[in-house]
Amino acid sequence: MPKVVLACGSEAELLEIHARAENAGLPAELIRDAGRTVLAEGTATCVGIGPADDAAVDAITGALKLAR
Image 1 (cartoon, rainbow, N blue to C red):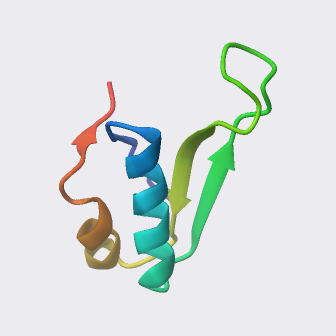
Image 2 (image 1 turned 180 degrees about the horizontal axis):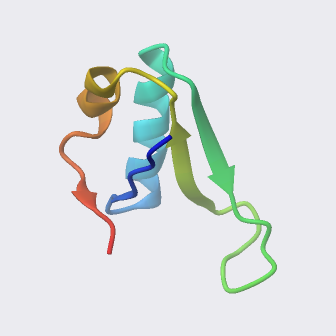
Image 3 (image 1 turned 180 degrees about the vertical axis):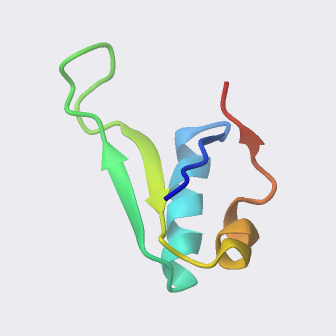
C-alpha cells in the first residue's frame, strides 16, 4: 500500500488534522514520541490516516505539502 508523507506547521495543526480525520470517520492514529532522543516524551510527531478512499483523505490533507 502506498504511503505519502506530508508536513504541517505545528503540533497544534497536527492535532487538528487528527481530530478532523476522526470526525470524518476515517481510521486515524496519533503517534507520540517515546522521549528517548531529542523530543520530549509524549510529543505528537505524526498522524497515520487510512486505509481510506483517496478523496476522503485528500479532504483532510489536500492543502499540505510533501515532506522533504
